[in-house]
Image (cartoon, rainbow over all chains, first blue to last red; front, side):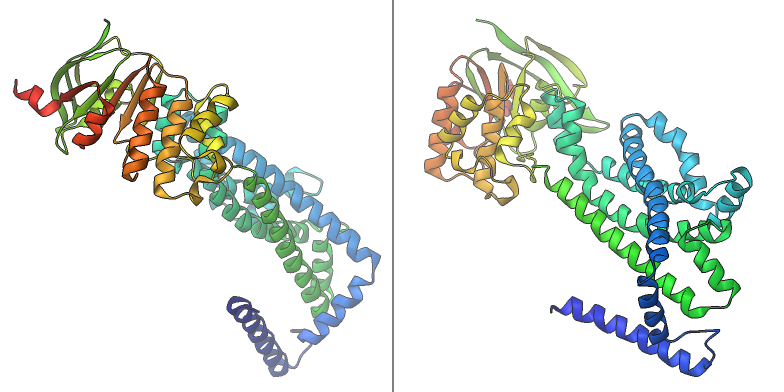
Amino acid sequence: MNKRTVGKLIGVILILVVWQVLYWTLDLEMLLASPFQVVKRLFELLKERDFYTRTLLSASHIFGGFITAFLSGIILSILAGKFSLIEDILWPVTVIAKAVPVASFIVLFLIWFDTDITHIICFLIAFPIIYTNSLNGYKNADENLLETANLYRVSFVKKLYYVYMPAMKNFIISASTVAIGMAWKAGVAAEVIGVARGTIGEQLNEAKLFCNNADLLAWTLVIVLSSIIFEKLFVLLLKLIFGRLK
Amino acid sequence: MEKIIINNLSKYFGEKRGFDEISFEIELCNITVIMAPSGYGKTTLLKCIAGLLKPSSGDMINVPEKISFVFQDDRLLEDFSVVSNIKFVTKKYDEKRALDILSKLDLKDLQSTPVKQLSGGMKRRVAIARALCADYDLLILDEPLKGLDNELRDRTIDFIKEYNKEKTVIVVTHDIYEAEKFGGEIIQLDLLKSK
C-alpha cells in the first residue's frame, strides 16, 4: 500500500470516528444514525430489487444530462475557439448557467415542465464547466505548432487531432471529474425538489418526511459511491480515448 | 538563372527592430548559407521569407509557394510518434520515402517511438526528417544541426545536400565550418548592411 492510499484511509477513518463520536454525543437516532446503522441499512437496500431500479433510473438521467453537456460543451468550445463570434454569443449563457443558483433552475423548470427535469438540470450544471475548461484547453494550444501547421497548410481537422486535442486533453479530464460530481449533486437535488418518481431523490424525500436518518444516509452513501465509480470509469474511458492519440 | 530577390526588406515589431532594409539575392535550386551575429534578426528574416511574418516594408520576389522549415526549436508533437510527426505535415504520406529519409538519419528503428522519449539530438533529426518528407520547393533550415555530434552533423549535411540537389535551400548558421560544409553561396548579413 503506498503512502497516498494510507493517507486516504486515515482520512476515511477520521471521518468515521468523528461521525461515531457525534452519534454518541447527540444520542438521538432521528438526528444522526451511526456509521454501523447506515452500513447495515445499505446492505439491506442491496438485497432489494427496488434499490437497483432506482439507482439505475437516477444514474441514467444524470448520465444523460452529463453526456449531452460533455459532447455539446466540447463541440461548442471548438467552434468558439475557431470563431470568436460563437464565444461571444455563448458568453452570457455560460455566465448565467454558472451564476444562477441550481434551486432557481429546478423550480423554474418544474413550473415549465410536468416531467422529470433531472437531465436538464445536470446538463445546465455540467455544460459551463466542460465548455469553459475545454475552451481554455483549445486556447492553450502551442502557438509554435499552430504556426508550423499553417506553414504546411495543415487542414483544421488534422490540427484538431494533432495540436488542439492534446492541448485540451487534461482540461477536459479535470473538468469532467468536477462536472460529474456536480451533476450528481444537482441531479439528486432536482429529484428531491421535484419528487421524481422511482428515483433516489424520491427516497431521500421520504427519508426526510419519516425522519429516517439511516435511510437518508444510506442513500447518500449510494450517491457518493455512484458518483465516484461513475467519475473513475469515465476518466478511465477518456484516458483510453486520448491514449489513442499517438 | 532565376533568383529569389529580397529587396530593402525590414521588419519592426512596434518600435522594436527585427531587421532593417536588407537586400540580397538567392539562386534557385542551390544552397545559400546566411550568416550574421546573434540578434541580427536572422530567424525573423527566415519567417518573413516563409510567409509566417509580414514584413514591415520591402519586397520579396520569386519566393516559391511550397516551403518546408526546420525551426531553431524542434516544434515536434511530443506525444506522437516519429511517423505521426511526418504525417502531420504531409498531405499524402509516402511511406517508402519517409522510411528512406528516416533510415538515412538513423531513425528508422524509432519510427513508432513517441517523440517525448527521444534525446535532444534524435529530436533534431526528427525535425529535419519531417521537413524533408514534406512537399516543398524551398527548404529553410534555421540552425539545423544544433546538438548533433561532429560525425552525425557531417553525415546529416551530406544527406541534406544529396537529397536537395534540385531544390532551393536556405541555411542559417553561425558556425563557419557548417557553412563551408554546406557549400554554396555564403551571405554575411552584417557585411551586406555595411556596403
